[in-house]
Image (cartoon, rainbow, N blue to C red):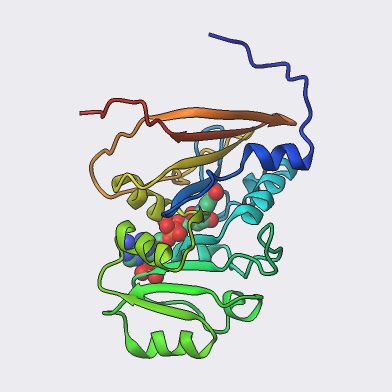
Length: 243
Ligand SMILES: NC(=O)c1ccc[n+]([C@@H]2O[C@H](COP(=O)([O-])OP(=O)(O)OC[C@H]3O[C@@H](n4cnc5c(N)ncnc54)[C@H](OP(=O)(O)O)[C@@H]3O)[C@@H](O)[C@H]2O)c1
């Protein structure tokens, strides 16, 4: 057991970016997931994550976006958080990463900020079985609509991989993360723990599908600022499979 505090080293932006760099020469999607939760495990306050955030969390959140080729979210998050396009270009590029939304229903508002306030077209990953008129409306609103036969993590990541979008930043939400966990598709989890107790009925960062899906992680980074803990876990490739 080792004591981590007090910390004695501040990280500037370049050092922080180096710590969060994706692996080099990726030949397939690498899924980094980021979430903020309260100390008692709540994933939202008042139905949104904003109340759990902090300057430290926002700094890392913005950095993670700048390092990504694509931002992947479930439609529940895009709707609850009124998502719009990312603002800043991916490092080394001229344009920000597109937002890719997973939605079985294609129930997204074509007049919403996702379509009207963005520098690049959002990618809508939906089902071929979703109502054609909804898909057409999203295409007319400027989205790159992809109708897949199934929306499993495999199919979604396969589509991103075909587009060369390998540095994936998944910003949630809990339903999408639950599916990624079940499919063993999470390579890294960046988890901010806010020094807050929320109580109530807020969910946790991953929910469903039924059953448990244990995957071992190793702790790669522990940073703190003003009592906010910024943890980075990655897939433990040395671990023996959990039966
Ligand atoms: N604390 C944080 O860091 C954080 C991060 C993200 C979200 N949140 C919070 O989480 C809450 C939203 O939770 P959520 O679980 O609803 O979010 P979610 O996982 O973003 O969205 C769930 C929706 O995504 C679509 N979806 C995901 N996987 C699918 C699949 N395999 N097939 C078909 N559709 C799929 C479905 O959309 P359709 O219904 O359109 O079919 C489903 O209803 C909000 O309160 C938000 O603020 C917190």
